[in-house]
Length: 313
Image 1 (cartoon, rainbow, N blue to C red):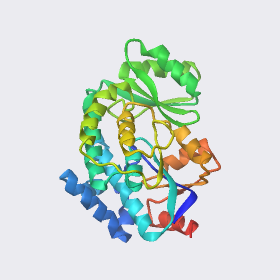
Image 2: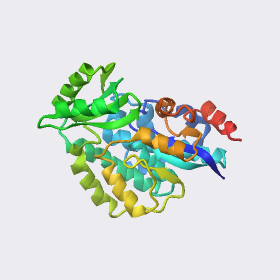
Image 3: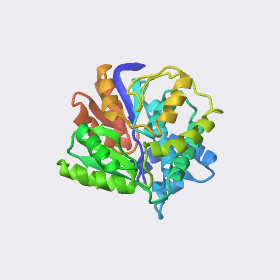
Image 4: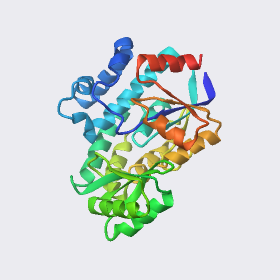
């Protein structure tokens, strides 16, 4: 049963944590079953790694991406086992858009696991370690952030890459250019500049080699027309054509995440409730700053998913 005013939203990198979904897995066997499916594709025990990560491996992009896809898909499957309510729209933040594609029936889960593992690997290899960086700028308008990037670029790359909420924009590019843009942003009145613990400048033109490699992988993978409406990061709009969705996901690697516009698009399509289908509540926090009329719900523990299911009973 589709609910016209409900969207499911899927988080991206940064939502992972050691031990995540342990309580949910204890009550719902589908969680570990989903992780086992992913492990078969990856060739290592993803569940064991997520629960007992002593070396910080879950923060390595090549592991983080399939890990979060798997976690969100596991929660989506738990939801399906508990409720016949289905969203009218889905959307995902950056990597989370792949989880949205799986939920909408565009791509098979096992195919998505292989693709995002490669996506993470290609993104990591596109720029040598230490050459790129990312930083969150708090308290500036989008225009001021863009102006700071233009002033700082010189012969290097730095650009706004995640429009996460009003006054919260992430920039990325060559490390020196990002540092210069941070100085320029502070001069324009930024309240805070926070370097992000990532090892590559995601969603910049520096990721073009990664997108080209992913494009080759996508040629052999079947995409289907979405069963649920998807709002895409690149366009903040929907797309019914599977081949065009492939192109969108290629572009998504090197173009900005327009999350503010994505949430605004959901609101424009009469969405009043958003279920965050993944670990944590980062997107719920962003949504409050974007559009307070959309009520957010979480799903990453037995009590939260039960309460959320009950809200729609």
